[in-house]
Amino acid sequence: MPDALDATFHALADPTRRAILSMLLEDDMAVTDVAAPFEMSLAAISKHLGILTRAGLIAQERRGRVVWCKLEPQALRAASVWMQGFGQFEPVHLDAFERFLQAELPEIPSPDGA
Image 1 (tube, rainbow, N blue to C red):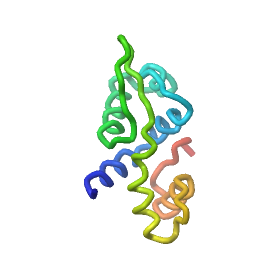
Image 2: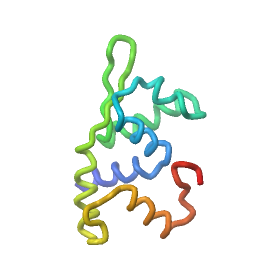
Image 3: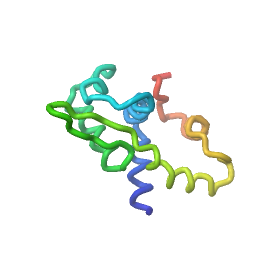
């Protein structure tokens, strides 16, 4: 379990990856559609998607020539249970957790660039 938690928190540590997860809350998306709003190469987005996939936060599936990404929301369960152990997060609300981290560690940029 520690390795899975490490992978989850590593994946969530990056604002681009958090933004990708937010996008996938709406629906499955093709990799090219995931990449569209970001000012980075498709290769860079693919690296982010690889980290999210290895952490189990998303699944990728090839349909014909197109690779689709799908959110795996159950993957956050272990991290949520771990955070609930601290008592400050009842129930765990990831936006509130992010605000808490930004208050404690102000050098971490917010996903919206503010």
